[in-house]
Image 1 (cartoon, rainbow, N blue to C red):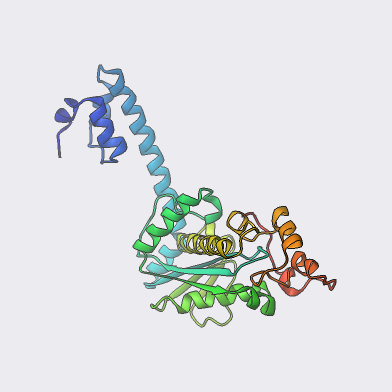
Image 2: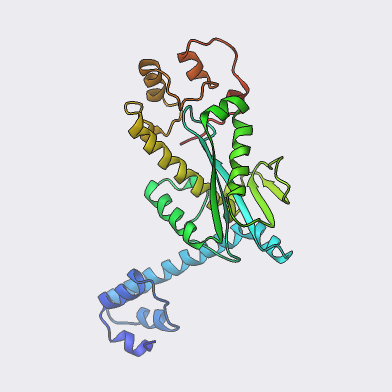
Length: 282
């Protein structure tokens, strides 16, 4: 590694490329030397590096906090802890998709959070690919619209979660879930309220579930053009409800949900599928 004296002989542009763009570790003493440098650009770089270090420390603390449930279980001797979450409880069309992810002990991924807090679709895809590369194991499970209508959305979501766990290929020692536990699952498990914002494993599963379902809806948009499925992902937006009324109900629509029932001319009260649906944001 170059000494501080050697680094100070570099141009500010070279130092910026190395430590800002390249994210190399800043050697001890360099910040103080840059702050005392006669070059204005060097002092500006020092401020940028201190800001960056502060953000990195805050992100490290956030990620350690998100691993508190996993860390407690690792310390109890559990090795394979699966986080499980689902996406697509509220839409009028398409499947509900669940994912399960087992992360290596102490594994962290900068920026990983509850998928609902990651507004940029491209960023969610980047995180999903990083999770797939870094996870000990991951899998998805799906319950289709027909199953949602037959079972209700809550039971269909639990079925998708169970299928995701079964598809892992590795049996978890413990399962962490967002809010629910799975009645059919005989593994030790814990439902954590707002778990996708409190557990890194559940957050990883939420990103995998969300990106998988979004990809499915984009594919369905190609098969069924004119409904805007790639944009609203099947949620009950005004444009989606209008498209159902004008173009008709598709095989992928959930017939137990009120706007679809109404388009079919049904007048009965909401089904269990409708009553258990969550109409959250996209």
